[in-house]
Length: 197
Image 1 (cartoon, rainbow, N blue to C red):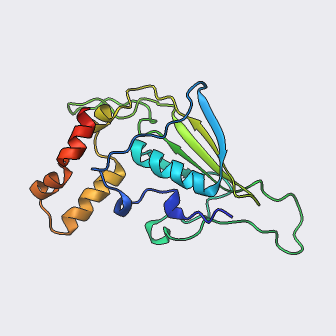
Image 2 (cartoon, rainbow, N blue to C red):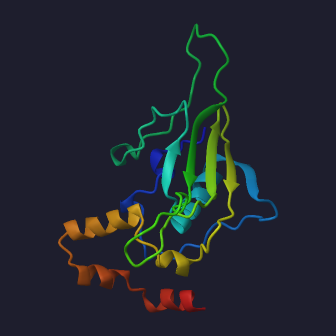
């Protein structure tokens, strides 16, 4: 089986580096929704790239799978694989687990009194992933089209995401001041050339 763990789904701050240049996964964009089935290993590679590149807003554990503990303390735990209990009746579930992530800008726009536009604008982009029971296969359904500019430059103008805030809090807890944290965010010459070209 896939052997996927909680940390293969959720991006935790200790595995996040905002200086790492990550390009979103390259997939065909002929259709509004990209659907595919990946092995556990292929899915882990795909999702590691996509979640770091896009920094999805939040995980939504879908109905019937809310018992899965997605906390930092449980990040090394294996995701559940259902087995039929002896003497049980009824149709077994089709999936071992199912999660959905939505764009950070999914919420409706709100009127702000501070000098910036609302993060929310009703973006429909979301990704759904479901592990097929009894198979090393994860179904991915990706509604990839955002209704806003999703370039790295546009994302840099948004307020910090939850994982970015946690990264800053971790550095502050280590005794770094704002000047030291800003110095860590500066790109080295090679990375800077990658952004410019």
